[in-house]
Length: 629
Image 1: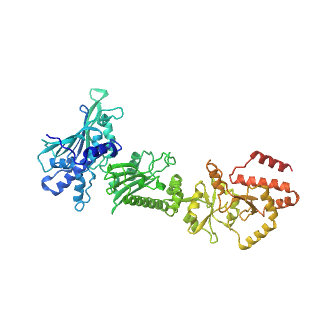
Image 2: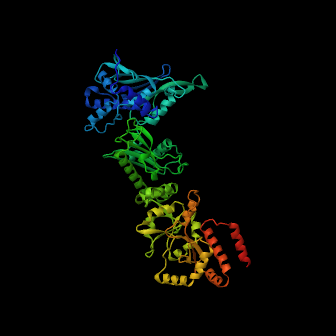
Image 3: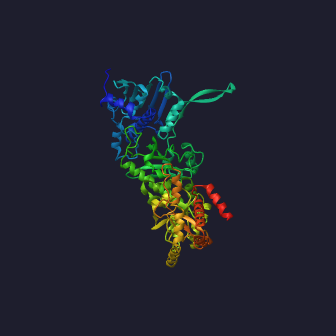
């Protein structure tokens, strides 16, 4: 029996496949089971088209056997089998895929037949763990069996054998264990269970293995004895392939908790199928609580990827935009182009189209939840709203149009959440902008002096309670042509024309006072001016319209690389407050005292805004000194 050589630059290609294409050795079992599933598909199809080849669906199986004594792992199927010529063609030529040819023949006649193999190289992944591979097969139309044997790069032999049953048996003689690799692990029951569960749980034919079962010893109630029985290791029918109308909520919940290691039911299930140029099924979940490491670098987002029920990739990041990183689940597609090892998505138009479709579906599910389940949406937003906000300001706002109607803010209207649409719809006719205030809590914001005139006019205020909220408004700039306006930045433009004229006259009359106060602060403020936003409080601190805001200064001060960024500050004085008359009096009678009062008012305004003062001890002493005068 002469040894034959592989037909496709075999030595180099086989070496490449064994050492480079597959990143995980346990993939070999997935590939062999996938090939067996292909063979069973072919035989099932043959039984439908050839009356002489009838076979019962229950007889189409895959069996795994473990021979620890001889260090052999055996995978046997009752599929269509191979002739000697087909062995030469499919096993003797690397990258020759019978499955691909079969699928091409069926494209018009039977598009619902799922064929996993594409490249014809999966079989050779077994050489990662095998010192020798033996394939025994008998084709459905043949009475003769054949045996193919190879130890790898040096070629193979094919010989005739007696084989009573139709189908294929693959015998893997495992390599010897080394310090780095324990190949004997693939003979352990637990390992086979784990690999089948992980990669092949949804192959639609039963994968059977003899397993150990412990039963009570009839002769001694305190002991057990081991028995051996066949067990189907895979569940076969994926939950996501069932009709939604036939799936109970508790089935979704149990699937999610067992598969994604959560002890709570998901808040939202997104289950749908798409048919067309790119067909796929999605089963995705939104957790009911934020994962403990969700906002840390070690959190890995991404969807699991299946191809025809066979597990391919655990974290397909390319399929999920980062602002929806809270979504977990899986995608099962027949149409995606995978790389030759079926472990990595190829970057092509299909992947981009699939990702866009998934993004659109998630957006739609969130919009529906916001509309139909407001309480549930607010709970979701408390958990994952930061991701949506991040999506608005990352990449220079490329996603802001898609996400702006999904974000919500608490407001001064009863402290409840509102969408930007709800806010703008209830704006008074004379309101020119969307007003917001920054703070750590609604209570803190409500104490801001700068809200006085806005309250008087009945304008609603957005509460920016997260330090990133202002970044969102800076990127968006407007919503429905209404600009975002900080209550502590620039001119709020709240006066009538008569009020503006009166203010200008007052500032002109008190020009020397305002300049003296500004000079006394030694460059700490850009301007001291009469305020149009204060109602009951004496002073407030605001920032220049076009510079860094007070809130941004606080944020940047915590970053050593940006701590030098300061807001261009403006001290505003309430002309209707008694303190203004006192300052006017001091300007004439006691200029030194005016400086002291100005400093105290400035320090007070800093504290109200949550900004640090330079010397708390000196400030406290100055308060005491003024009290004693």
